[in-house]
Image 1 (spheres, rainbow, N blue to C red):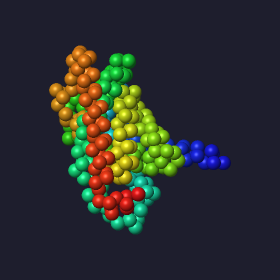
Image 2 (image 1 turned 90 degrees about the horizontal axis):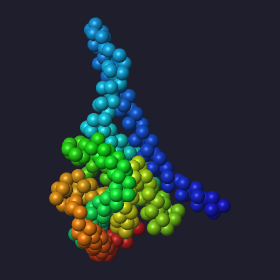
Image 3 (image 1 turned 30 degrees about the vertical axis):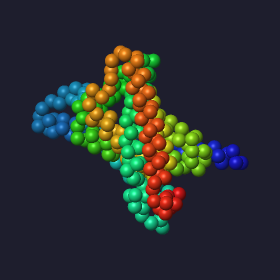
Image 4 (image 1 turned 135 degrees about the horizontal axis):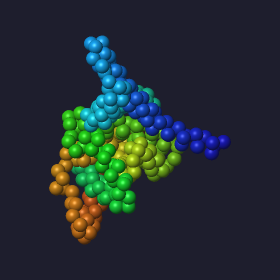
Length: 300
């Protein structure tokens, strides 16, 4: 009986991811159907004016396919999905995990300069570690990297727009943290030890990205986000870390990444990145201990 209940609890942890995937699918289909409807309406006006709209493929399907592959369209669809997912999962998180009678916490009880510095150092280390994860997988299977690169170009990361920047730096971190480090991990830690819960939510986070390269580094980053959230006792902390990570990834100049062929330099950079990640964790944990003791007890 206990085993069945345990399995049920673990399976229940999959629901937030499935719900998010359902929202994403619904928004995507709705956007495509809206594009088709607008294209038909446009051609119908031409037809009503006595102009021949041409065959179905040339007049409707081809323009629709071109428009839905446009980077601005993809970024807008992603932003709409993420906002809806944040609202739905945020409501779930608020109803299930936010105590109604607990007093509002001060900023100093959530984060202090030591913790902020630790997150920044940790983030820089994680940027380079995730880059080497991508390089390793790309070396093992170049087609994986090509798929990932094509996806990034289609979304518009080659030429960042305002919509893409807002989505990447603000909307996506809030939405994804609510889904994976919020609802998913909250349920998971009730069903299993933290290390297993962290692995599970990070795996689901990687799987949700639906390609090997992006999924692999999302898994690694997800592990750190889960650690930050759990140790700091606040989802705000992993949201901040995620925003910092995406900000660097979106706007960091290319010269900060070494792309030469020196294996020695690559080893040095990776070792430095690992040291930065460890140092960031150390600073972060030290900062947690320096939070006001009276308020610290209320975090739970």
